[in-house]
Image 1 (tube, rainbow, N blue to C red):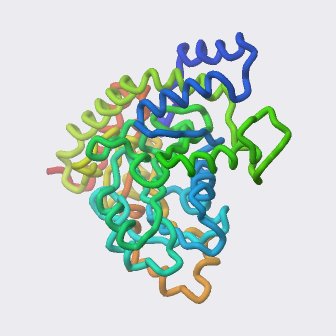
Image 2: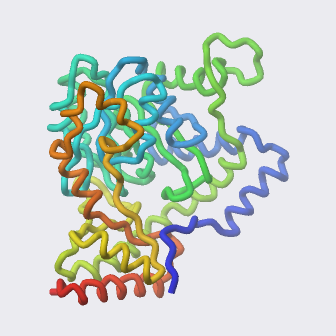
Length: 374
């Protein structure tokens, strides 16, 4: 039985929502985008929000809006998708990597202190795999070192830290609506803030340096970072199914945990106890990750590794000039451990119970053969 790593959760409701935009002859950013914005602000509790074409550009706009400029340093966890760091490079700033913890691979604030310098202007906690960073520690760090907090909540829709939605706790936060996110618009991003001045900066930056989109007078330099009502229509339909998506993701996680946690040699990703958990991926760790992945591929089951550590990404080799000792694997032991031992199991919303049972059976078969079963 073939089991893909991911299939987008789209159905007739999504088609019907898109049809409304076609029927109304409004496909550029318009009334549907306004409605989607309002519903996202209601969900997150943020005062202000704007869209971006994707999650990476959302981070770029957020960094620009809070004043990050060329030569500034932004601390980024070593365990995250490349876009978190490449967006820093886009504004001319320097991504500085720190390690993550070993329990749930969220940013390690003690290690952030290690790499903090006079040039550090912002820190980017990334809420990965459906749980939250320990944000009280981030805010304490921010206050002590006078740096701004930009939350990368690309995977965090619906995730709460001590009752507050991630992405709304720092100076500014960003979300992604890429196809594999909890809700999707195909491509798309959203930026939240409670700071009116930052919000105004965002409005100018994303709309060609003007507030009024119909004006040909541009008070500031800005760009076109709008989305379309087609994307917003899809997003609205997806958002209406959020509770259904959360419920199914929890069921998927529970099925895997009940079957596979009994196996000696497997450790499950542990969510933050101060946050709810919406399993973005069902993530396990095992010293046999490479052999397990190969065995599952041979049985037509697609899995993924954890994130490749940013400090080893070839595209960031330029940062090693005169600072090669700061990129030693020993300084990033937890993110290296995650990559070398992590396996993400198929956990898309529409995965069937039959497929889940098949995946579990193949994993059990593998560990039985390797004599690791309890």
